[in-house]
Amino acid sequence: MFDGKKILITGGTGSLGQALTKRLLNYDVDAIRVFSRNENEQVKMSSKLKDPRLRFLIGDIRDNNRLERALEDVDVVFHAAALKHVPIIEYNPFEAVQTNILGSQNVINASLKEDVETCVCIGTDKAVSPLNTYGATKLLMEKLFITASNYLNPERHKTKFLAVRYGNVLGSNGSIIPKISEQIKSGNKITITDPKMTRFNITMNEALDLIERATKNGNGGEVFIPKLEAYKLSDLKDAVCDIFNKNVEEEIISVRPGEKFHEVLLNLDELRNTVESDMDYILYNDPTKNTNNYPITTLKEQYSSDNVKLIERDRIKEIILNEKILELN
Image (cartoon, rainbow, N blue to C red; front, side, top):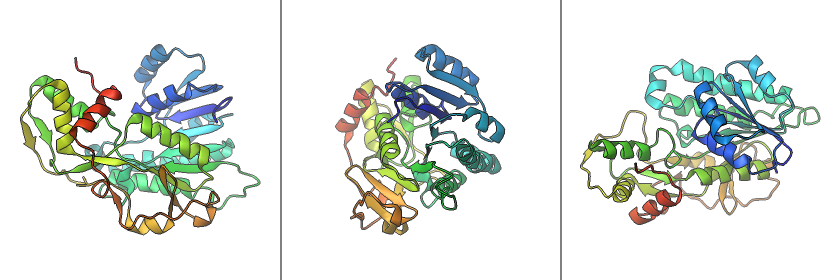
């Protein structure tokens, strides 16, 4: 699927970007261009991976000219660059608009100009019925991608635009496991918004598998959403404490502004345009593009983390250890 391809990853020095780069190096790719603003992370990444197929490009997706240069002769684009920290974005909303919306349109424009084969954007559950600015900007990013080819002549433009949508990856930068781990190591109380709050369970490897499936199976104009289990925050906290063999006092800090009690990956209104495969739900902007003839979803209520199977403490602990998410020292 990726053999012989030139690939560019925007936001390539982030958690997902680095993991995706490592995964793609397992293929016989021609080159991977890591596009980001973070020169320090690029230096670290280059030193750690030491692969001649890697190219490190300093750039910002707000800069259309730089993107066009970066995308020359590229076959596949994975768009992972975004401003994502909710409190910061709430204070600086137009900065998020410029990066997450206008920057994403720049990625689309450059992909069309350079005749890229496939362009996949990395979405989020926050885009579903958004409560905050981050979610609203990511919803618009998703809409830009899945409608990008609506008015194009397919004989002139071959680019397929796709999206994937999932929640916080277990153990990724800014997620709850690194936060709990740091609080345990420093001897502080563990702060929990609400023990009954639920979150979808997705590991980095599962996120990468989803991206690969979407790239392989997508025709353009779809959003791929994985079928997942979920967990309660209280069980996640207990699992991490078990791994550290610590019994740490917790402090309930309540739900923060713009935060949902349960994650939602498909709302009720989206279900009528949603089909499903064995592993994913697939949301179509235009249902006539379902040329794979996937059946209409059997979901009768919104796909949220309180409506799926909940995994318990021991299983969470097993996943964290198997995925090597925690640094115990």
